[in-house]
Length: 413
Image 1 (cartoon, rainbow, N blue to C red):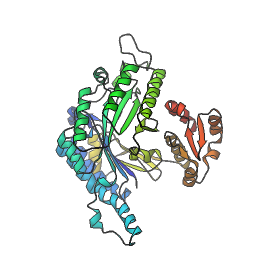
Image 2 (cartoon, helix red, strand yellow; image 1 turned 180 degrees about the horizontal axis):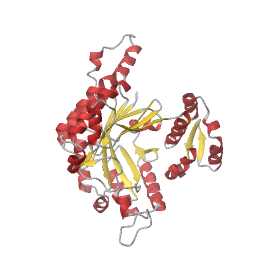
Image 3 (tube, rainbow, N blue to C red; image 1 turned 60 degrees about the vertical axis):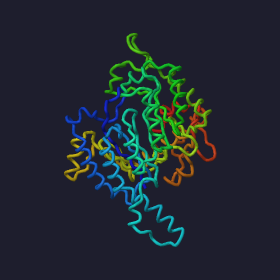
């Protein structure tokens, strides 16, 4: 079964660093409406159910900001997803349980009552958009994991990157999330921000730990073309004019990252992926499956899917997305048929981002070839330089070089 990602392309205000497709709610009348989105999504669910005959293995609702929707909009979204995918998602596990017992089939009507409690179901949220009513609705439909976009506990830094909230709003959001019955919380934090130094970064990490999240995702600021921050800092990191807050360079970012890794590991978090840390058993299963090369289906404007060696992206326009689907057409802007070599390379590059690495046996079972033969020259160089190692039949990236993983992995492309 594939994982399911649902893109909600609306937010209150576009952040200065954000390159993802999203539309501030104040602008929706110029580029499409929430009505266009829901009509399109309903049609896309109907068209894509054939791609998920046994349901989905996980759900991740992202954006944008899903919790920017009004309570009735949020409930409408969840009803559509439960109706479209949750019943089938339970069918396989139910059949497997029955096969262990009597061997008979499990009734379809019983399975239609299964909701998202049976799979990992996550919704992104931002401080300032959470209310007790919205959290109640999320819980009612089986969402049990929240990923909160905190980014920083410095009010000044939050203003620099265009966030709508302050540090106190983060603390209040966490309080509401816990009161709402959620026991699986991720906090997103960013480093390398304009005007950020080691002290303010350490304070954000320490404040986050005081809130006791089960999961933390730490992302280095990247200046994406076309974003306000990229226009504000055309020379890039570390080359800031005296009139602008200093933008940490690669070395400063690396120092921030290394300090955070040491701090979080000491606090009991498992560093299971380059940017992700979790208490034992609280790893994000949806993302883990993607990093392990599993299929996933993306719904909504700008969403990406990879199923059966084919990758496609939905077009990034709410109005056109809705119109295409009302006309019975899929709103595709890119379709790519991945070659076996491309699939192998991607499997290797994603897998090496994980602390578990890539199983040599698993790779051979999947592709019928030994990765040591396919990437012989690159592996010999990297193994000799101790950038990579082979331990317990797994190829792994040396933790010392994990912050520079992207540069190292490009050699496999």
